[in-house]
Length: 332
Image (cartoon, rainbow, N blue to C red):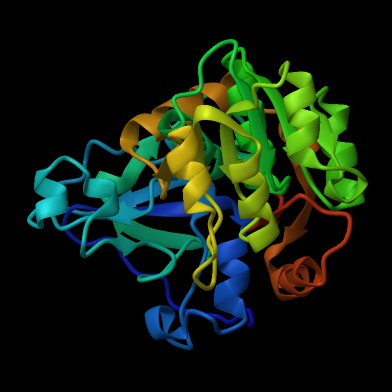
């Protein structure tokens, strides 16, 4: 991975050029940087899809976007013609283009995108915090899939950025939330927000959850770790007719106790990306202060240092979310 000088793409018809302020680095970006998605990205592709910025210029037909308007991007382009799109599920289109993976992304000073994926931000929301909108939309979609309601007992297996955000969004709905996480730093961040966080090495999570719920088990579990032990824990912790939401990306097929699913009539849901309503809800959550941005954003680095930030994230350590200051400190 390297930082290079490229000529900015001028906006064509229906396109908007954005001066990117901040861009977040996520797990998918790390996979791309390590070559795991070369078949989709190629070897010279600008990546990044968590971002905030301001409109600079527009192409013909996009005049509704005024230069200086604060914006973010919902990085999904669907075909509108496949059976999935026609069924109303455009966000998981059979020919979905994920902008920042399948096409150039936000880790560039000037980013030109189709106007239909640009979303205006309220002036009250700082551009720094607005860079969290995309991962908050992921978490909101996950919580929606799990039908989390006030009074539910929720277990989140995996306390990285997305797991933490799922816990926060579920808590905002009145659920009781427990997070399961191995990393000491992440546990401290989560606990600092008043959310219980358990180390799975220190006890049987399913037994602890059963004890806390009078023997019933969790109403909803979210598997965010992408690991076999995490999946087993997420299934074992559920009450009869409980709901498991599969969030983490598992690199290979996993074993699952189908007899337990049958015996307890468990429900399993996949949760992938987000819909427009999730983005709108995420903007409101961040703008209202319901999302603890200061706790989630571990550091901000200049664009020139982005390769080093990727290396540091890959090595692990005391970090939750890293933002790249693409604008060089001129945005707030």
